[in-house]
Image 1 (cartoon, rainbow, N blue to C red):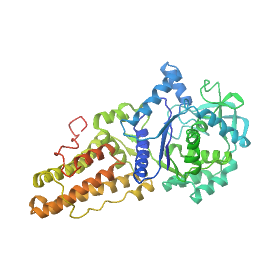
Image 2 (cartoon, rainbow, N blue to C red):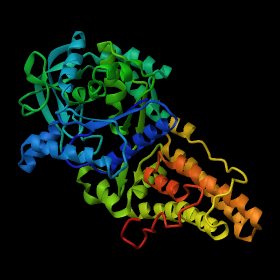
Image 3 (cartoon, one colour):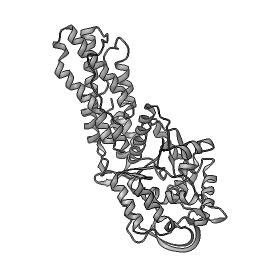
Length: 470
C-alpha cells in the first residue's frame, strides 16, 4: 500500500491539525506492515507557495531560510509523534521534483493554453474564488488579480471524473465527501488557471517550461509530489504496479485531490490513485486550528507536557469520522487518565502484581483466550475512532474478566488459569495497540515479557493535576 499525506505549506510551524493527519497515516502504515504487507508511507512539505514568500517578507528573512527552518520542524515531528514514514519530500529541495513537474506539464501540453484572467485570489487557499469572503475562513481579504496565465482544460474531463468516482475506481471516504465531489463535478467544470506570474510569485517556484515569466501553480506543483518523490524503480513499484494508492487529507483540499489531480493524471496518461480518505477539522473554541493558534495547538509542546501516548490517543479516540472535533488540553488529559492510566495501566499493573503475589512471577498457560475485536474493517473504512474503540475492547473485557474471576479468591489451579488468561490478554493487547500507541504497546509488551515477569511498575502516570506527562 502506498500511503501519502498532504504536504502542508511551511509559512509557519506545524499545528495539531497536521499531527492528526500524520498520526492517522501512521496507524494505517503500521497496521498493514503488521499484517506483513509491503507499505510505503510518504509525507513532506509544500515549499513553493506564495504564502511562504509573504511569511518570509513579514519576518524579514530570506525565503529559503524560512522555508528550510519550518520544513525541518515538520520533518522533526517524526520523533515526538512516533511516526514511521518512509519518505519525506520537500518540493524546493528534492532533486527530482522540478524535473518531474516539468514532465507532467509537457505530458499535458495538449490540454494547456494561455489566456488573460481576472479574479479574486485567496493567498491562504492559493486559489481563485468568484466572490468573497474565503469559504475556508481565511481572514485576509481576497486579492483582485489580473494577468495572463496558462490554463488547463479541466472541462474536458468532467464525464471521465464523474464515472471514476461513481464507479468506485476512485474511492472517496466518507460518503458525504464522495457526494460533495460528485456534486461539484456534475455542476459543471470550468478550465482552471495553472500558472502565476513570476513577478507576483517573487520569482519563487518552478518556472513554466518555455515560459520563464510564469511559475507553475503551486497546487499543480504540490500534487505532483506523489509521483515525483518516486524515483526509478520506485515509480513502477508504488505508482504503476501498486493496487492501493491512498491519499489522506483534510476536507478543505478535497477538490484538488479528487478533481484536479485525477484530471492531470488522465491528461498525462498516468495511473490514478485508488483512494482518497478525508478527515474534518480540529478546532479550538469552535474555530479551525491555524498556524497562528500558538502553543495550545503545538503538537510538540503537547507531547512535551503530556506524552506521546496521550496526544496520539486523543487524536485517534476522540476525532469522529465525520464532523469537526474541538480540542482542549482538559479533554486530552481526561481521556488519557480514563483510558491509559485507569484502564490499560491499571489492568497491566494488577495482572503483573497478582502473578508475582500468587505465582512468584511465573506465567502459567492461559486457561482460556479473551477474544480481541478486529480493527481491520474499521480501518478499511477510514474510521479511526471506531478502530480505536475496537482495539480498546480487549482492555475492557480483560478488566471485566478480573472482576468476574477474582483470582485472589481462587484456589491455586483457578489462579493459574485466570492469571495465565490475563497475561495472554495483555500480550495480545501489546500487539493490537502497536499501530495506535507504539510507545505504550512496547511498555506493555516489556511488562508481560518472558516466562517470569519483571516486577510491576506503573505504565502511565495520572495527568490531572500533575502538570507533567507520565
